[in-house]
Length: 213
Image (cartoon, rainbow, N blue to C red; front, side, top):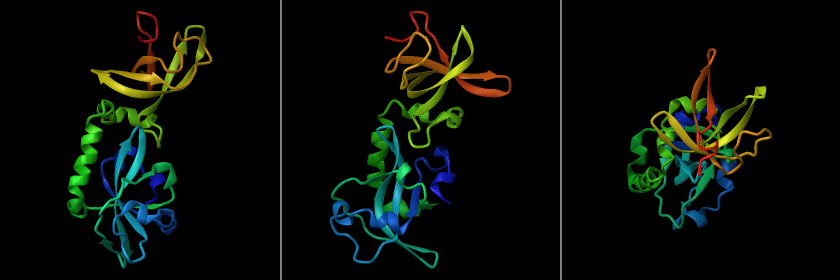
């Protein structure tokens, strides 16, 4: 399948084979690997994760696909190489079995340790947020802001920071055009609400002034 056809939830923390000859050509293998494979590659074995808020595929190894078989080349790294989801939307993606990841398990553990230390990881586990996530920046969600003066809400991007029971904390990424008592960069609270048959993410003004200190 193409990456653009898959959701964040389907590929997060998965071992993924990205097949795209043009993509492979765009990467200077000598910058990534100590000993680049001599054979011509047409794919990368990657690990789908989030790096500083951006959905990325961290390259584990070069690969070659032939007759339905996958040949994985050893990885000895000069540096970490990550492909942003937005860069590879047209690539073919195949989620592979865990056996392919065994030679790279230490590297994957290192990536997961880095991710687990991020307070946002808990919010990434909340499936009710998935419909509102940005495909390239999964921590960023669309939140509805309502004003007493107007019936039509304003939709703004908020970056999830943490969750406390059912209340989410985040940073407002856009400057509102209406007066909600908060501004871009402010810390705010929001939660899942139901309007009719539709779930939305709703801004929750606080009692000490709308934005959090």
